[in-house]
Amino acid sequence: MGPYLKEFWNRRAFAIELSRFGDKAEYLDSKLGKVWLILNPLLLAMVYFLLVTVIRGSASKTSGLSTLAHILIELFTFYFAQNCIGGGALSITAGGRLILNQAFPRALLPLSSSISAFWQFVPTIPVYILVVIVGELFFPKTYIPGLRLTYLWAPFIIICVGITGFGLALIFATLNVYFRDTSKLLTYITRIWLYASPVLWRPDILHGWHQIILYINPLGPTLAATSEVWISGKSPTHLELIGCVGWSFLAMLVGGYFFISRERDFAIRI
Amino acid sequence: MPEELAVRIENLSIRYEVNVDTKRTLKNYIMRASKGEKVRTRTVKAVTDLSLDIPHGSVLGILGANGAGKSTLMRSIAGILPPTEGRITVNGKISTLLALGVGFNPALSGRDNIILGGLASGMTRAEIESKTDEIAAFAALPEGFIDMPVRTYSSGMYGRVAFSVAVNMQPDILLLDEALSAGDASFKEKSFNRMRELCEEARTIVIVSHALQTVIDLCDTAIWMHKGVMVEHGKPQDLVSHYLKFLDVGALPSSFEDM
Image (cartoon, rainbow over all chains, first blue to last red; front, side, top):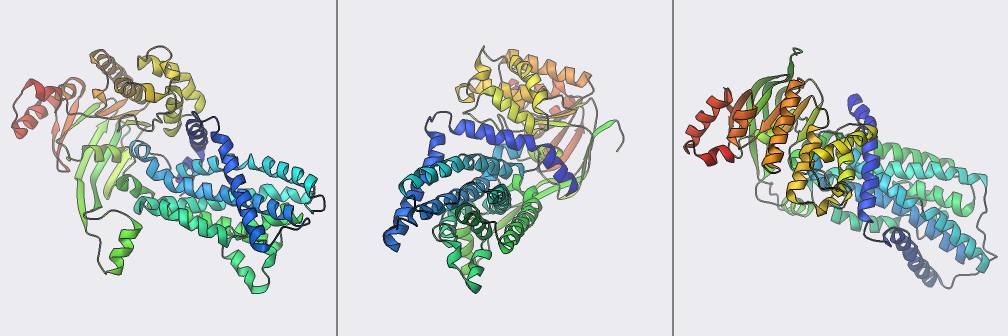
C-alpha cells in the first residue's frame, strides 16, 4: 500500500492535467458549454422551488427566498458529489486504452473526475451569492445571513463532500468494470438519493430518532452542515461534524480498499 | 537480480477467467442468481511457466501467431497485468507502446496529448514540454499540425506521434507491440535508427512483430511463443526459419513483411 500511495502522490499532476484537458476537450466546440454547467442546476433549482412552493402552498414573503436559497446551495453541493461519483464510475471503463498501455495507479482516473467535478462546482458559489443578493431586493423581509465567521466552515464541508464523493466514485468505478450497467443504475440511485437527502427539505424538520435518516446517508451530514452554515448562519453541530468526517473517512477506507484490491483485474476485464 | 539484467522473468504463468455466454451486467447477474444459475466462465491460460532473462542493451523479438500470449507477456513486463504465478523483476524505467495511439484524446491537440502521455508515464510537465518539439519533429508532422486536434491527423500521423512519444521518453526499457507498422518506408528507417541509438545507450527493447524481417534485422535474440508456452529461445534467423516451417508457409516474401 505504501509504494502505491507514493506513486499515486508522485503522479498527481497527471490527474490534474487529465481533468483540465478533459474539460478543455469537452467544451472546445461549445461556447455555451461551461455556462450550461451552471444553468442546468440553476434551472433545476427553479423547477424544484416551484414544485416545493406549489405543494406546500404559496411561498410567504418571509420564507420564499430562504427556501430558494436552501434548494440552490444544497443542489449545487449535491451535484458536486453526484458529478464526482458519476464521472468517477465511468473513468475506468472510458480509460480502457490508457489502462491497457501504461502502468500507473488507476485511482488517478476517478481522482481526475473528482477534480473536474470540483472545478464545475466552484463557479456555482458566486451564482448562489448573486441570486441571494438579487433576491433580497425583492424579498427584503427574508432572513438570509450576511457575511459572517461561520462561512469559514464552508471549505471544510466542501472538502468532506469531495472526499466522500471520491471514495464512493472508487466503489462505483470498480463495480462498473464488473457490471457495465452500474453507471446506468447510478442515474436512478442518485435521483432517489437526491430526494432522500436534505435538498428539497430542510434538515431541521427532523427531530429525535428521525434524524437517523440524515446520518445513514453518506451525504446527509455534509448537506445538513451546508444548510446550517449557508442558510441558518450557524456553525455545524458536533454531530454533523462527526458525520462529515466519519463518512469521508469510511468512504475513502472502503472505496480505497475495494478499488485497490481489484485494480489488478482491470486490464483483464476491460 | 544481477545488475546486467534489465528484466528477469521467473516461472511466469498468467491465467484469467472470461464469461462465456452472458453480458457482464448487474441485471444478468441478478436474473441468473434468482434462477440459481451460475455464470459460465472459461479459464484462459495466456502464459504458462515462462522463464527468461533480458540483459541491458539487448533487443528481444517475440514471435507467435495470434493468441500466442505475446501481448499478455508484454503487458505483464510493463506491470499492467499481474502474474498469476511466478515473478517479474524489472530494473529501469519502462516506456510502452502496446496499443497504437493509446490515451490520445481526438479533440485535443497533438501537443496536449503528448503532455498527457508523458505525465501518465511519470515524467514531470517541464520534462515533457522540453521534449514536445523534438517528438513532433521526429514524428515528421507537417508544420503547425502539433497544435491541431488529433482528429484531423491521418492514421499514419497518429501512429508516428504515438511511436515518437514512446521512443523519446528516455526509457531504460522500451516495449513495442506491433508499433513498427506505423508510417512509410522513410519513417520505418528513422525508427530503426532511433532504436539502434537506444541500444547503443545500453537501453533495452522488446518488440512484438509479425514482420519477420524486422525481427531478423533488429533483434539480438528472439523467443517464439505458441499457446502461452515459450517454444524456443535463440537467434532470430534460426527461430524465424523454425517458425516458418511450423506454420508451413515457406519463406515467401509476404512472410517476411507482415504475418
